[in-house]
Image 1 (cartoon, rainbow, N blue to C red):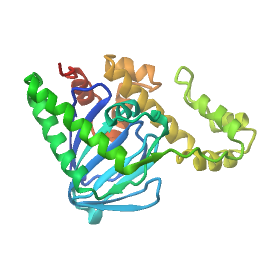
Image 2 (cartoon, helix red, strand yellow):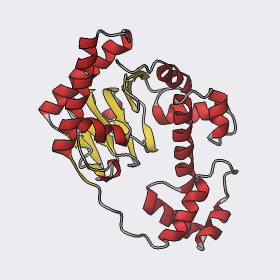
Image 3 (tube, one colour):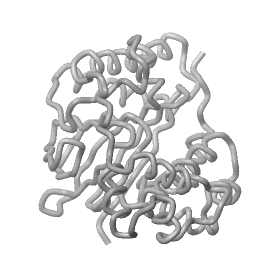
Image 4 (tube, rainbow, N blue to C red):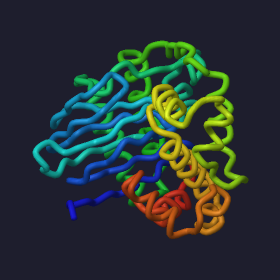
Length: 282
């Protein structure tokens, strides 16, 4: 079993959290529905991204867009240690001071070299660790936390973001949208491939190929990503683990827990505990 340690860092802002990971684990292809910006502190990794295969080494910055399919493999199997800051799209727009709509923002590269942003991130992660240990910070230190987040977001948007490009219409795009809506319906049982193919008006193979081309994942993997994200939001908003599993469409809590750890690197219980500590700075 590859070495793996993951620490969630609650943040004093809604829609923002940090993660510190030290791991030799290979993370399979997945997505997050947040912007991510991080610092690779030790080791190196190779990953798929929206720009193709990329490599990052100690000192590099890591970035991803919401919904961007990526993975992560350690270079030469050695553990790597990295910090990540996850921001819901509206929070990045708000703290970065942009007038652009959140869904119009796109980070341009998955691996960055930027000394100013590197230093700003180091400062922010230090502040988050301090807040993690002592949530009731004095007002002056609370202001410093806010300033550290604003500096990171402003630099990220100012130097490494552009306008998101609308995807070119795919063959059968309207039909595939119907398929996607069916997959996202957690109130119903998961559909069969035959049902999805009928909705798309295509063969099963054509559906698999077209869906994968459009979304970067086959239908089943996409469905699980949606359910995991819904479970994460439900837990953050105060729902119990069993209830979140049921509402998100999992067979039971243990099924959700297995997939949650594989996807995010930490357990639903750890996420629940971190979310419970969210108390906005005054």
